Image 1 (cartoon, rainbow over the protein chains, first blue to last red):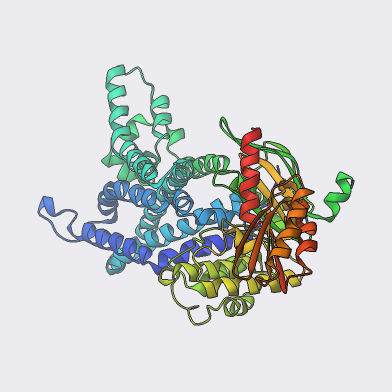
Image 2 (cartoon, rainbow over the protein chains, first blue to last red):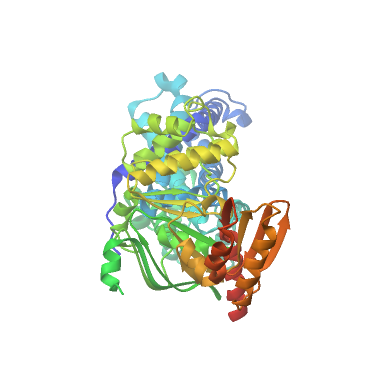
Length: 274
Length: 318
């Protein structure tokens, strides 16, 4: 059944979700958290080496990326896991679906509203965190940092899409929250361990092409690759550059994969919800 | 007999052979009926009789597994049904909404979705008596206030068709009276109303047609008079007869009993003479009592008695 999208209806839902997150200070809280982490890492990131103060954008990004890779997926999953199942459980979804709005428009509106909240919290938080160091950054470093924030947003939106799929699929909020935590654990902690284990066990049987393709199956790894392969200096910090085929490391390719991670779970969520 | 097409043209809702299943469970089986435009239609049945499934199908929340279902002339499964929803209002049994918003904001949200001017919200809040609480968060509302907000939401955009699922749930007696007064004004502009309620006394004098559901099937449908006729439930004639004239009245009733196949149960209490009889004997009993009675009243079976009667008959057959 073909149904065109009425963007006005999408905007109504998106604007409600966005205003809800502003009103309950979610955006403010997450932005503050990111700002504090960004500033603390920029100043104290090298404290273990006995140094305090800003030591360049690459070191800051490398330290921040290690933190963001844990934090952003968790925040995105928590933000989105109950958006549908929660409303269904409370009983508000049924009435919403009797309105002149399609299920796709509901889903799209919710995703875009939450995406706006996550994007603004991430951009404002990390932006404000480095504001005191603004005078110390060159234009190129500023763009490099903006690229890092952009990649964090992309990863957040990918995990938000996964959260929407969980929310549509789960029978109740408890199961949804359990699934969200399990997936966070899998993508952020278990996936790389399994990959390493497979690499070691295969004793070189896994080609670099297959290894690169396997990394694409985890948006957290795609985020890491985006940050490693966006700068020559960062590549030097990791051994990945020697393993990854160049075709897989182009930022445009990695951004495309990340977009795929946004679209694919959303597509399946839409299929299930409809 | 009207043709199917003719019935669909004048019907607000038309169902033909509609069935629906949840896994192995048959929620609805071969349900057919029409709801005329401008009618108030009562849908009654025990819990699990299939009313909720029927409501969800008519609202387009579910698609029938079999049969055809048209609402305001539109197939509920069609893409264009989304537009039809602008002409539909729905008040769920428990109006659950966004507690973090104020009454005005909730109404404005639904007005935006229905593409109704936001200016209509203030009038509707006034209509349901929520003007003073309009700025308060819904989480502070009592159950009755939520239900009134739900009614205001259902009336947004002056819908042609309104579904009310246990609408007076949580309302106090004054709230119930106000609710039906609002409903009367909605009916006066020609809207069709589909209502379900467990408080049958509340709707029995208000509905034009009734559908009794049992076990996912239609147990009976028609006007209350038709349903009473179909069930042939006994009625009570109460007459005021002086003690002096009571022997004469009893003799007249004995004559009626002699000519009837049904049993007449007669009881007296001071000047009050009650006759419990079959509907077929109603006129004969009235004729017997009228010459001596200073006052006569006929108490027909209530909707509750009719409903229970059909339920028992259905259970016996199935």
